[in-house]
Image (cartoon, rainbow, N blue to C red; front, side, top):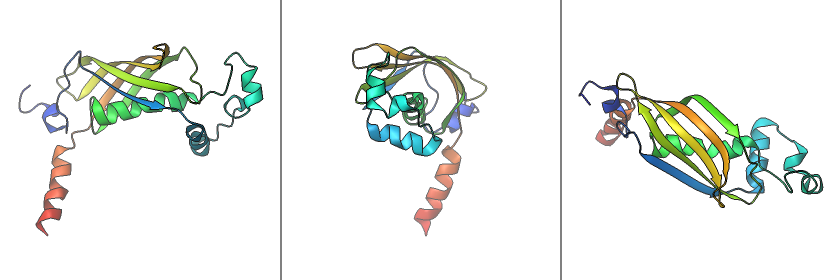
Length: 159
């Protein structure tokens, strides 16, 4: 990577193709409630235990946004890292996630552009049994934050 590469100005640097990162969490009813608070999604499959028990899901499930939300943390915190946002996602929801299930969101770097801080990622969310819940791809852009972060931090220390 040359010194004029946009990756030199990102906080985590240029990702390596093939590299992986993941995060896990156990879903809770509070996750469902907070997602409803943000979006207004009050689908009874998330709240009515009796209805959900008699559905094909067999119990309460979390919203799809709760399931994929963990992916936001992986890309923004781990790989590609701080300053990263999604440009595009292509996700298939293949298995519902029940309230109380532990899920793991993982990414694998498939392609890295040299001219722009853009990556193509393979993405998957699995439950604790290793079953795929969400599968697909994502394209991300990593903002070159290093100059912006260093500037104000140095001024604050100098005072």
